[in-house]
Amino acid sequence: MTSGRASEERFIPNKGKTRITIFIDSDILEWFRDEAEREGRGYQTAINQALRNYIKQDKRPIQEIVREAVRRELRELKKQANEFRFSLHFILHALRQ
Image (cartoon, rainbow, N blue to C red; front, side):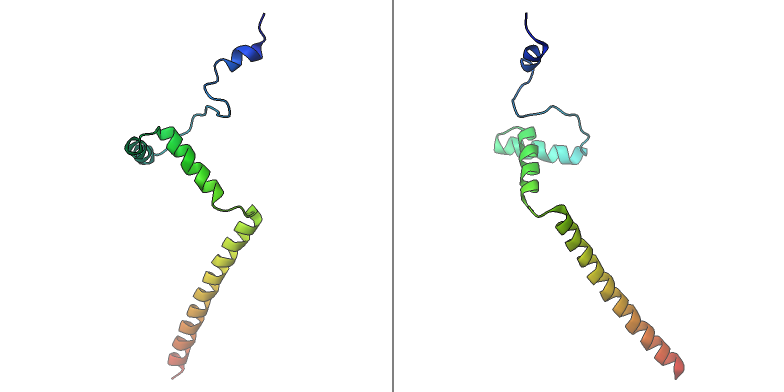
């Protein structure tokens, strides 16, 4: 008698891989298929490698990444506020004359 686990393992195509269903934009899938064919490998392997490369880009904690993004946005908002303040000052000065 075989256990349920042993019979399940026979149907797993690759250890360390998980079968999932996702929706991918058609143009993205087409691009991966074209690139994979050009490189002589499977498109799923190409997608997996792209995802792996993406997650290896930045090893910082998520809090640090978010903090950097918020600081960048605040710098841009401050710049815009200063430009607005200058424009407003210029307009008010012109109206006083």
